Length: 331
Image (tube, one colour):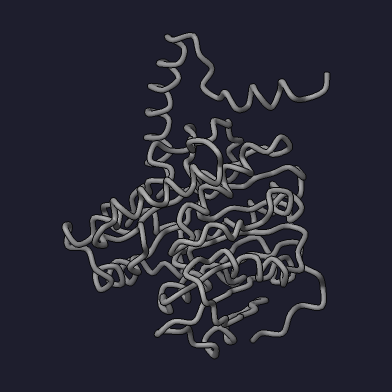
């Protein structure tokens, strides 16, 4: 692997992978300092933890990437990424943590820059990168819509994404985590940044989430952090994390998907002690909106106006969890 920088990085980005060598390598390439803009290799490290599968990554290919990449191949007896996440947290050297539970998510070139900007100026920053799926439709419909890994690779080749990562917006659609855009509550986030101490305060990755893919672990982590009394949500509206097709538990058209989702929901409710709902916290939008992303900004504003009009008509506040945080603050 590339030798770690002697300077302690501010940020440790954790990527978890299993049986997705092509997709995870694309993710790592999109996190490298020759792709990310406005940052240096000394600012951050990337910790890739791969749970051993029938198709493991090429360690030599990872070692050739510029920047500070650290690769760990683990023999994990379970089916959840939670132990791998906690292992990676133990390896992290940064004061801040970036968490990508699903290693199949490529990112745009401003993600690290703007995440660090928010984390440096606000110790309670919770930075969320909106999620997208490559292709015209969410990938849980890929079989019915004729979408395949081969078509995806052709789409990526057609936009030369390594030299202009913002063109990923041209070949994507919103994911179900944030289907109504930037101004409405997110259900979860698959590319999230926060202070390491805040992550520790919610217990890091709860290993009771023992279902394949972690079940609803990602929702649990995002919710716990968004509801935390000391956090302020920042959304990088001009950036994105783009899911690649890889046969994921809930992000592909697998047999029994509806039953799997119900089981995940039941476990989440049991561990949370109540039904889960999207945290109603109002984000601060940070970053530039490049031309390919502007159509998503426009649609976000249109959908938000409908929501705000509805809440105003009913005499309700659209961000109740923010009100609850204010009520807890000392006066």
